[in-house]
Image 1 (cartoon, rainbow, N blue to C red):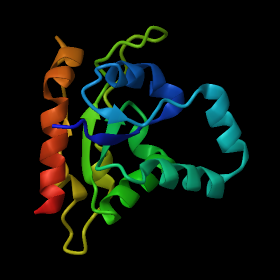
Image 2: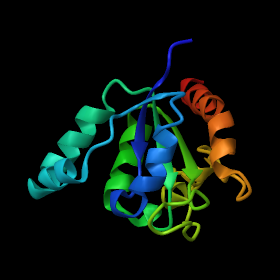
Image 3: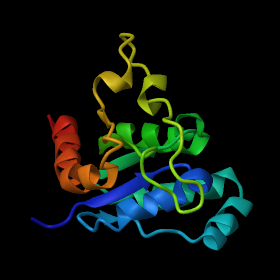
Image 4: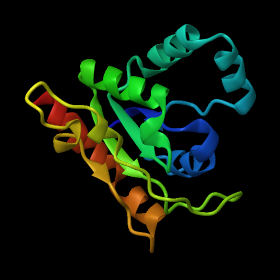
Amino acid sequence: MAKRQIFYSFHFDNDVMRVQQIRNIGALEGNEPVSSNDWEEVKKKGDTAIKKWIDDNMNYRSCVVVLVGSETANRPLVRYEIEKAWNDKKGLLGIYIHNLKCPRTGTCDKGSNPFDTFSFKDGRKLSSVVKCYDPSSRDAYGEISRNLEDWVEDAIKIRSS
């Protein structure tokens, strides 16, 4: 099977080093990492330019993987990416990354489930449909590596059913 095209959603400032570990797994075709300098250039142009960059980079992706660190659930752009992915009927899932070690800061506190902040008209939370995986602290990287492809396929199936 061809590699799935993935968009990774995360809090850049806090989690970019943890996210890079997941990108290095190589099981999926993720959006290319943006350098700090490139991201700063996009940010300087304002919210409209940022959302256009997100829209352009999310286009043609089959799934959005939200990599959840300590502050991810509160980030406005992550919320925008979640809402866009859901409205565009893309596969959507979360993975807690607090147990991955950042070379600068080590592990971090577990963040809130970002899908808990969205509700359907009937009152159910988005988290009742979208899974957010919590890899073991003993081998977070290994667990993500072994399961990422299956988690993505499951998320895509949920949206296509």
